[in-house]
Image 1 (tube, rainbow, N blue to C red):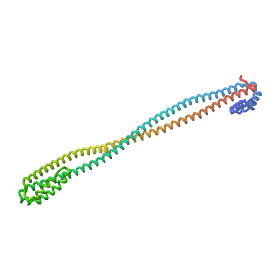
Image 2 (tube, rainbow, N blue to C red):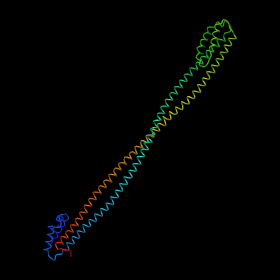
Image 3 (tube, rainbow, N blue to C red):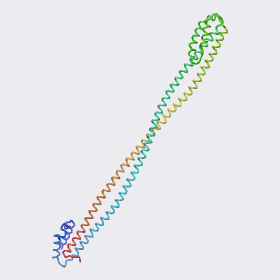
Image 4 (cartoon, helix red, strand yellow):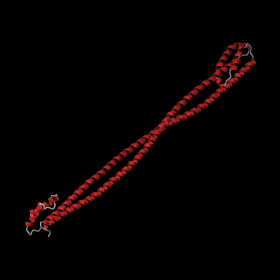
Amino acid sequence: MKIFIALSLLYLTLANQGILSAFGDQVHPFQQVIVALSEVASKDFNFQQLFVALDELAESFKARKNEENAFYEQEYQQYQADVQYYQNQITDFKNKIAQLEVDVKDLSDERARLQQLLTEAKQDLYDATKLFNAKEAQINSDKSIFTRQFNEYADTIAVLDQAIALLKEVKDETSLLQKSENIKEISSKMHTHLKQLSSKRVFYQPLVKALTQIAQNNYVDQENLNKVINYMNQLRQSLIDGQTSLQNQFDAQSKLQQDILSEIQAKITGIRDVLIPLLQTEIETKDGEIKALNAILNDARINLTEAEDNLTSTQNRWIERTASHNSLIQQYDNELLAIKDAENALKKGGIFRQ
């Protein structure tokens, strides 16, 4: 009896492996063995135990098939959750990357604007420094011209003072004769100095001519001499007034130029010591912010790539899992079919369920 059962199970195994199916409707040799055994077996043998064993085996395969389907369904639910998780990650990372790219562009634009302001500030500093140097050179030149003109007035007034004092010493022909050479000399000096003031509309020729004539005369015309002295005094006062006006104009012009120079210097100081350092600091800050955002952006891109790779790997694993599941279900179906074939073989051998 044990041999009979063993051969029946061997039949099932061969059927499960597809060996019996190769014979189609033909009777497999093991079927013949089972049938032969059934023919010679004791009629008192309880074949119901074999059918029970076959039923239990079928139920076992059905249970394993159901367990596989249930487990597959659980894995499918987890697969869907994983896919949704990675898809959400991908969406989040894409949104984050898009926002970071906008933020980096905004910071880069702001950095470019600051750089343009810095370039303009440096150009303004260059222009202001150039203007300052030109204005300072102009002030020095104006001062040099003023000093020369002021000294010309002073020297001419001094010569007039000498001439007036000299003429006041002429009282008669004797003193005139004694002072004639001095008068000629002072006349020459007056000509030289007064000529320098010709641009100031000082008409000195008549005075020089009068002095020359006095020096050449052999007599003293006191009335004429007094007129010359009076004219010299008037000229002297005119020169003093001109000198004072020159001084006043120079002082006013100098104050104006110094005010302008101070404004330019203040602009230079503000640009050099405040604006440029401030812009440089802001640019450095923006560079740091851009660098930090780019690092975050790169991390987000890496995370996006990892999420996409994880999604692809998950989908590929599920494809493999599905193929494995289908193959396993097919195997269970083949096992159940083999059991069915075995029962049919028993029926052909005249063995039926009781």
